[in-house]
Length: 204
Image (tube, rainbow, N blue to C red; front, side, top):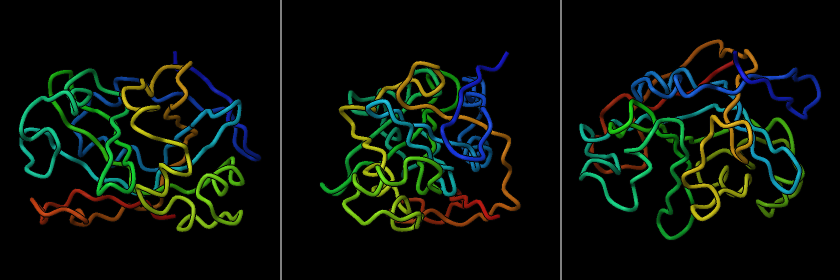
């Protein structure tokens, strides 16, 4: 039976935690299916919630653009472990990026979360971003670095968290929302395997 959680946001009913079996799929399938799901970040007793609107799939050992392409290292070990765990890395010496491990254990696929639609905790997100309070998704969570800052996600605090566990401070939940359509494009901001259509955007 799915674990139910209450989302502290007006108009949102209780949602179900996304189970580990969801993340056992291949990265491309997870990327498409995770659009519209909710990221729930518990921070100092407050729920910060965002709906996933943009992701990219990375295919592990078969993908030159993936962190796992060169094999397992201390840095990317989370990717080779069980599915449904957060993998966070620091990029350009500027910001963090949030990924979820997927595929069966030992296969290192993952999904990079590129953008969210703010749902709850907007004022705290704005404070963490250092901007004026606004529900403007592009300003608050419209990029992988922005959303990590808005949700207080760093490698030290979030890397390796089980996002399928009810007690986890970072979870993925499903409230039944389904995007009206999904757009597919090539991935952006990478120098290898640029032509692969593995970027997915939710539209509604």
